[in-house]
Image (cartoon, rainbow over all chains, first blue to last red; front, top):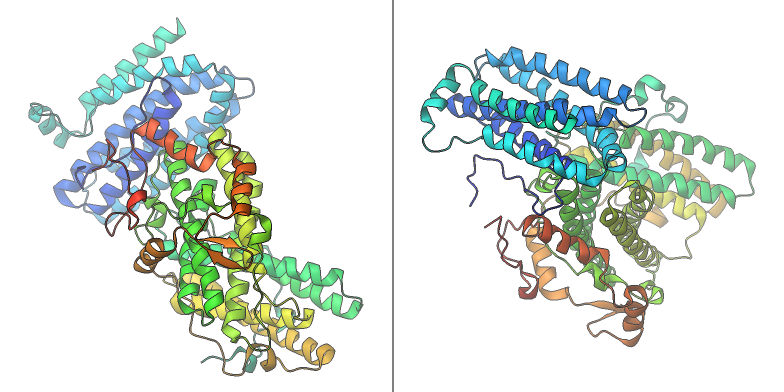
Length: 197
Length: 405
């Protein structure tokens, strides 16, 4: 049984799962995580919010390091990608403002809803204008080959603490998720370097 | 009850809108009451029918004065349709809107079936609703495959998602989709409103699917839209044949306007979002004037009073979007294996049905079955939302999946 306080996004299985599949799953997961944050309060909300920060960090890194550069190799894609990067930059600004806020303050909720609109709009833009071009313009095996890096990054920044990492969890209360997120970013960057070389 | 025939409404020359008024703020798809979305989708279908009906009328109308009146009201109705449908957010995908359409088809048809006084007409709605119920389930599985989201995000637990009459079994010989019409002079006026409402909604679903389906790249999505859009066309035949073909154009115009009054008034009573409620209220005021105009045309050209068409007791009880879970479970348990033979309903798979099934499926698995298998392959189970316990039909219960308990 899934715990009621965690998201329950279906995960695709099998050998054909490509990087777009995983990013779509992350979009759905992020959407659900926003709901979990909004629906919680106090320590539970702080925890749900930290999960959200980790999800967003892993996701945006995968897009910026792996997927957008690949999109740029398709003719006439630069303008679309520039727009996506600008959206990501704006979302990060809103997120930065939230990191230091009291999760139960009114300002937090207002900014969170703004962030949600920005993130979900950005996700839809990608689903409509970027992902279909990727699948049409990039060989399937290349998209499949990128999936393990995204999976590794997800595993490095888990959204529910594993047993035995309580000390890491304690760190998160002071500064959310930064260590694990950095590790996830490194994994994706490594994979990106490998694909480029 | 409120009698729209007693009200003048908003003067026709005050009904044109400028760009600012048309530029409506869309609903927030993450926070909307699912039944607010359903009311928007319903009124879009109603206004789309109003526009197309008026165009058809104009094509057979030899009187240029009347044609000018129709043209004016039709332009206003077009603006009403734009204002209503543009409440849907760009953030929502085609499939999310599709799930909304099927939720409408389920809960709107179920409400109408529960309130229909004529047993033959009631049977038509009970029969049809189990098919749309199945479409919701098929699209919900597609939705999770293509967009990774779950249909409960849209239906929000007020409508269940599980198999209905399997879409594969919904393909009948076209002859068997033609029903007997009601008798316009004997039938309860409520029945006229019910038939027009459901046929408008189904027609909009058909048009939406047959036009948006090819926008998908995923083969299974393209195929599923093609299949279900063909069933929706069957439904338009099924419901439109209930309407008395002897109604004059003037009479039909009155029924259309009266029906629009009934629905805007109903939704105004029920709306939870004050901003949307204000739109229903404004549109009711506009429709009251359209009804006056239609009543005048009826008096002048048909020599009859509108009360002879829609009765003199005012509107029937307001149509409500509300959960119909228990009723639908009862229909699933008792009518799942029905099909049509001519204008009637039978349980056996008769010769003409079998012939049609053979021709259309040709021994192959249709997309509506393939989508469930593909979902199982991708995620290990199928998508359902059974809030009231297991499926009432044992053979349609889910095989145990690996993801959800």
